[in-house]
Image (cartoon, rainbow, N blue to C red; front, side, top):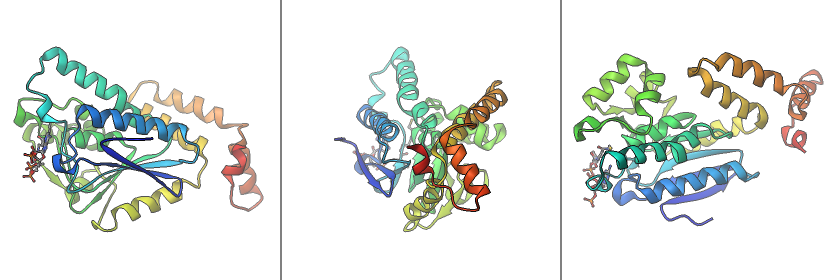
Length: 259
Ligand code: COA
């Protein structure tokens, strides 16, 4: 696969996707959004890949949507930008059937904070900064920020962050539940890979169902989704392997169970 704005590597069954426009602080222009969308397709379809890390080159994770694309746009274009971006990137990350983790290395502002929030969870370096500063531009978040931020940090905190355009450092982001862990700059990727190393040993089928059910937690159908997905685990090769391994007092081998 060839990409223009991102780097794509596979290490120990983990896809490492690095947004690579450091001179523009990895701002999400149309080309970068398309590259990322194609990268998620690759994560879904490549059987060697069990999970993915999304990170940024240089001092930013992503400093937002590319503001230089805005001046020529009218209301219709703005709505299209938001809807299309949510469909081909943000919702796609959130609904990816393989664990997708943001390793936030620096600025995660506007669309960058939204992209990190679309990932299944976030690890941040101590240099990371988070915020939804769109009100400074006479805008609001358009890539799901008002919705996902509210889910992650609660309504009051989401209101304050979006209204003040406050930039939170990594520690504050951890305190309010926006990120799960804060690491040194040097250990960010290693720490994230270690977590995925644990996850990659689990049943891929069960992980995909976990993602689907937790993503359904905001909908009235959430409990029902869990009931159905729980039931559909029974009788699958991976469930048989996991349960047999427990009963036989050995480690489960889900790779073998998939065959
Ligand atoms: N869109 C387009 N270009 C951006 C960008 C964005 N969201 N964020 C940064 N850039 C560009 C700058 O224009 C600059 O380009 P140039 O060198 O060609 O002039 C380059 O990236 C470096 O940014 P700069 O502002 O010089 O870096 P800084 O360290 O002084 O400031 C920020 C860093 C993140 C505080 C600042 O870039 C910023 O406020 N960015 C916009 C954040 C934002 O409002 N995001 C929401 C967008 S909806």
